[in-house]
Image (tube, rainbow, N blue to C red):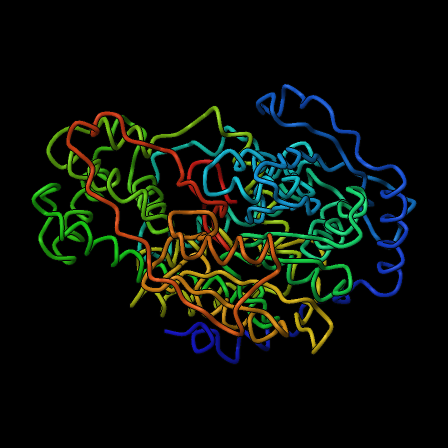
Length: 545
């Protein structure tokens, strides 16, 4: 079902009563950006050895850039954003083209590791021409970090994951959402209202100035495409080149409640893709030779885990989260299937390794969750009556049960959010306002449904949409698709792009994992630059990205 149908008139009326701040922050915010950018241009960024806390290798150099907490008060409180860089190698006689700034999405993802991507073969030509620059947006990592709860509470498993929750369970989740929203307000105080996408776009312009760039070359993945699009709308004359990888639908009416409903619907399709692939390899996994039989195997495992959690740690909630990761990336399919197969045959170790808690990542994950929640809740209006959420998600769960309610619980704190909301900016540029931009999208991406790429393409005049056909991995730039990579290189290195739209054949399906690898399942993400969800779902392992 389409989210627009599910949302309905009652939700629209309820949302209309929510107080919203002006979309672009008024003239004072515009002046504040100019003041902050001039100051940053004068101060620059002093790159040096990265602090040990970052955990980055010696090849990267780190620095900070100051931005106003509140752009309406540019001389007021300043916060520091951490920045990382690897300078252009200059190899292959490729002309140097300045800095390429990257954001991996989230909200809540850090790009501090991004410059390391230049060491991958498919990125070497781009790394020869550009300084690769990553950064942690406001609230993330050491960039004025946000927190909403004690990180140790993240791993209080095992947990359930009912596809059709009871009234009692819903009441429990409402109480948790209210407590979480209150925790965000108590820990962040009055600063909480300043963590939103418009300020992320403004911070990007200050970073541009601090890097000494007259115009910005930017690549955003997933959520990064949204505030990148805000930047293109607010500062079109300061854009040099922009790549939008796995684009979020920027329609103001979809930020963010309806986008999350769209996402839940799309994940049902990717869950079916995964099950069909497992069924195709029934001889390897013995989970069923049809998608429906594979589903029954999954449900049998969930029921068994509900009765007796694996290792005392992994219940249905952990199982669902682990298989949600497979809906993001094809690369995860073999190990997830192998772990499920092993568990149903009496060996729980591979599943525990994949789905068990990672206490060492708790602080990072809690921070990512806090930033995700603050940004999405601050960005726009949300239904404030749970009856709207209940109606819309109950309807959707009838046809898309896999992720619908877990997605709703993730975002429910926004129903009780204590900070004022922004009015979403209408992303749109006219003829001649913006240089050509490049949009990359996989046709069956669930985290950023393909309709979002089409919507962004229509809104940015002169943009080009390159589609990876019959593929669904979240993030296509710099991955295994040489056709997509050719378009990316031509655009970034030469400014060339096809007219309107182009398409590439999808990447090959993954090969099934060998039985030998069952005891050491991989937990590494694929070698692409998109880090995770577009609007409302957990990213693999470390939170959202």
